[in-house]
Length: 351
Image 1 (cartoon, rainbow, N blue to C red):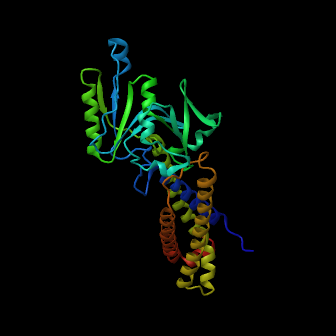
Image 2 (image 1 turned 180 degrees about the horizontal axis):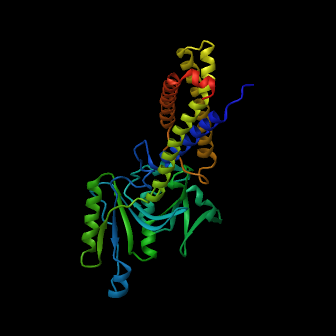
Image 3 (image 1 turned 60 degrees about the vertical axis):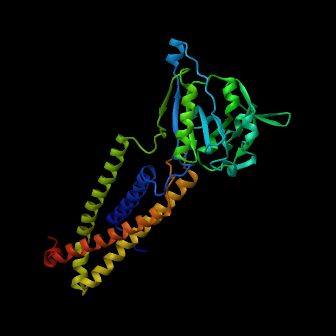
């Protein structure tokens, strides 16, 4: 069995580590596809927020918020959410919709999504994500979800998707408004930007002279790495690439004596080029295969423990394969170029 040299082993390992590190950077920083409703924390690109009063105004001025849902006749479809909790493992929102605008009913696995009859009443009802099932209990054949000091009848459960919808709890907004304070952050979403602006305008009219209302931009929770982590990640990636270049030079140096002996035995430059390209190509193939295995295992079995590959697609594998091919061509060219310049006599004399 042919023994692989230490230099080549180091070269293969570095290719593998660079590939994995590059995919970590891609997974955190790059999304190859347009964000969907599910990727935007269950909001569309039309969403806008409104802040109703504040703790200061309530405590210092005695201002009370009487938030009201505007009339729906003759208006474009819209949805209103009251933000109650934004924890990563439990997102709680009061919800009112004129229609199932974002087709959330298609994600329901058991039961049903809210209908107009639910919103017209102030019954304590909820539709929850699959990961919240462990926080519910059953009594008299009815499943209940608890928030604050209220119990909500679960009328529907979303199927598991691996998205934010797994941790969502939508509560009937009419009941929420009838059972707790109205101040806080609301989001208005809709089928169009005009529907959102029109709805916010109507809410502002009803609030005028009664309480303070201010419009705020929707702020998506931060994703990816912090600036410092980015600097460290890409510094390590750059250092590894530089180290790979140095390793390549040492690999060329270690081959000089072998090549000198082979040349004296009749090896031509074409044969040298073929042998080196085959060696580099096999190294790239082995490294690529190892990267594929590691990425697959991390994506499917260690997602929450290691790092996230949301938004990662097979085209990045193709890009990596192309990059490794380019690197193979460059390394082969560089090696052949250096080995052609060597002095056979000096190498054979050990100088």
